[in-house]
Length: 428
Ligand code: GUN
Ligand code: ZN
Image (cartoon, rainbow, N blue to C red; front, side, top):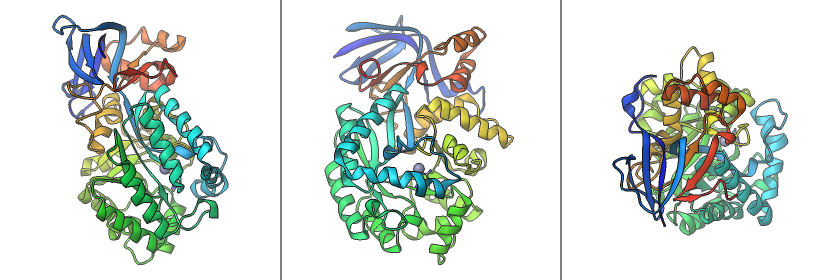
């Protein structure tokens, strides 16, 4: 299958250094992109690219790489908007009961398919997800991605205490089931496995040892967990793991940190934790809509970044409140406003595409529109609603356009989503 797309194209070559660091990106005002067998084979000025196959005209819209969501919970689609005090109540009163339903494979399958369609409607082409402790939930998630040709990361949640029986495994079972799932899925098509101890509170020391063994035996896999999200969570963690230096010290001592480790939240960190995270090259994954919804705190994006941390961005559905990475960018911007910092739209869109791709080491395949990349891309309309169109009349440059999209945009601004060269949104 071969075709040529006409549109405006934007991708990032590197992280922007400032709000007007336009050299970090490539922008093609009147462009053409040729896609063949799911990959980008040519891109450039329309006058210079040799057009092949069917012509698909997306002018005057803007094409970017699909969004990458670095942290979400597949079984929490029906948890969004649950009224609770803060994290621990929210988990106990709403989240764990809903996740317990995933012992039913049919339910897992239904929600996994809903998740993928929802992500694609919102322009997200790659997700990094927590499933539940039930292996069937992982099969359902990966199968739904595989059927759509998507590149995803995910894993079985390891949790052997502190939740209803229906959600718990044991240290042995979590090891065996994770091992089986890694063998079955990691590297199949575009699927990658993340070893997933939920967080220290729901794992005994024996289970942390099982996670350590999995990590040691499977260095090709990712690791994902939560850290320093909420003050009560931290206090409780330290009461359970009092021998460790701090919360990060738990994961550090069990050998779970490294460049393939994704640490959700990272809000309330001490200097030692920050230093250990940066030294290990673990990724701090910021989840702004969740942090505001659960009252968790204001992530110190620039404090961490300036010290050398790798910062990623994610929705954290269902603590998070929107599937849209544009809504997520907007809330991230507002959090930085409250901290007296400015998160410019170039950095926001960079992070949601190429930055997140680099954070998971998949930048050779996703995150930009280079020749050879997979054709995972989205068509963005800054005038998707009447009120956006009205505001768009006063847009003067690319930064304005991106800022309008991040401030007012949502799934309505995603005209089309392509995965591996196939139209996904219009066919749902
Ligand atoms: N910490 C442990 N589990 C969870 C979860 O499901 N959501 C959030 N936001 N934090 C967590
Ligand atoms: Zn989470």
